[in-house]
Image 1: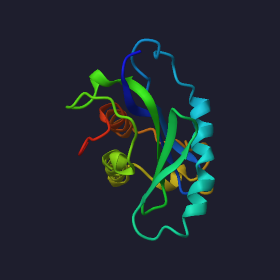
Image 2: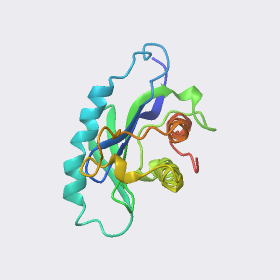
Image 3: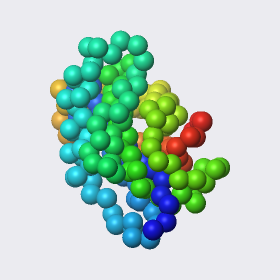
Image 4: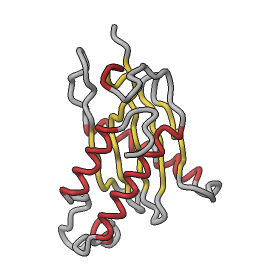
Length: 179
């Protein structure tokens, strides 16, 4: 079997009211890895992180990086970040996501991840979310289930935001300095 390195399997944006605002899935690449990821399965994974965020919230006073939330198995791990507005960003990492020959400048396999390996991805996601909030036509309260009026969509449906999240998910590799 070829040497494999971690890649992002899913990026989730969860609102202040613990409602999913955005979920992007990223396919694993290489021979034998072309199967589609199940969006419902990843929705459940993202939902399982909410209790961990709640449990760590009072103790977390400095910084937004929650680090490893939990490892589901030897292949899948979930990392978290919270914005100043209480929006939670979750990245699910597939430890065998892509062949090592397609990643980064060193093109070497990575055995594990450090929390700081995901910091550039979280910073880029937070920047994308800030750009979304700066859009005068985007109203965050329309996506809050407690305040949504009528048939308002609870999902973020900005094509620019979606494209930026997909760029981040596809461009990230362990050791990247900025996105």
